[in-house]
Image (cartoon, rainbow, N blue to C red):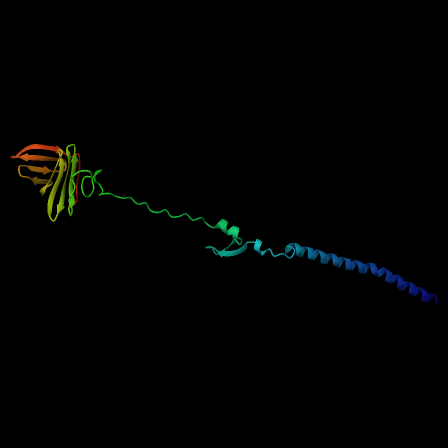
Length: 205
């Protein structure tokens, strides 16, 4: 009887001493699970999808064979910031040309503006001169030359011919000569009048 009571008392004592150990193991396991869950929530952002906020990284192959990482923009604002600005091409300027290059001011392809020293219809300007006494032109048409002048306050239109660099204009009582720097009027072989051209132009060819 005495030994039986002692055995029951020992069994009850051993059962009471095992519960704290089991409770400690359960508490430790719960703490570990809570820590793992917290770390997972922190790493993956609490279950939120952060892919849209992270730039995609691609690896490009360089000439040396080593990979280089380059961040590719994924948001609209980043794409707009990195888009190169385009500059509109400047339109080419145009210059309106009147007459030919090298023509004096006031001379057109028809003759001297504001005077009667101009070519007629179907005529092409071959020579033009102007000075203190007026202006004159020689025009070409059908293999012939026509002289138009506005000199000494009068005007004259007559046929002409070319010898060397000088144009000759025969009239009823005189011979007019026209060259790059001057003009002259001859009667009976003598020079009776003339003047200088301070501006002159001659067609090439």
